[in-house]
Image (cartoon, rainbow, N blue to C red; front, side, top):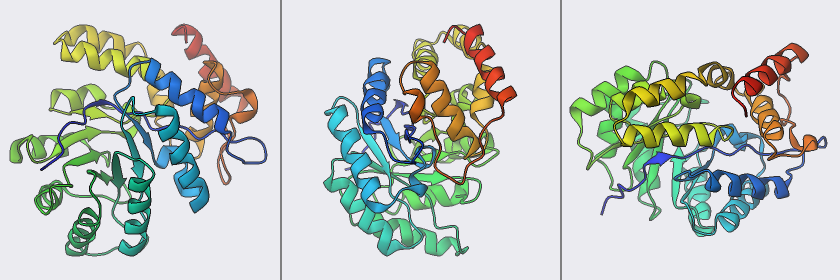
Length: 297
């Protein structure tokens, strides 16, 4: 039976590193509680978590920590993508074993392969686990709208897609017009940059960074109440901050964690991004501080 129940706000956690680039698990646990206390519907561990900079033991330890701290209060989605079907199946089975409730997997991108091989890739992974999968569509690992629909038909575990390769809006339009909600569930990403436009087109949720859970939850709740104008007005108050957060990986990792520190979730020693990463300038930090002050965050 297809899994169709995930909806709402699923922030992707930031991984706190100290100056030695070691994971600070105490701050991971504090972050999980903070996200849940702010009403999120799920939690993800993925690209914005710098998962691609973690070794295998760290990936499994991070997932285990998040699962343990969440204690079944919200579902946990784990990114298990790799450049081979064999490795992705290994990571996916391990994530399921450790308590992940769903997976997120982008197609291999280091060496470009044909769409047919992507279909085979997703089918074989879906056939190896018993939990649902988010296909992840990103700029450097894009899944066309037509292919997303075709892949979703291959296996009941392929029920979700996170659309974030630009432009996202035409993909939402196409999927809405050519698929039912009983087959493919659409989520947004890209830091929530186009959250409202995606909601107008039937998005079932979004996976932003972890810094503004209260903002995204409030916009989501207003939208579910059909208070569209109030949702737009409230979101607009934070548009400048959301734009800053939507910068490329590396720079944004520092920004996420700096804001988590300013909001009292991370310790000041835990805001490092794992290298290589571009650190914001002093002026950039000042601009962020000003926006946080304006928005009383």
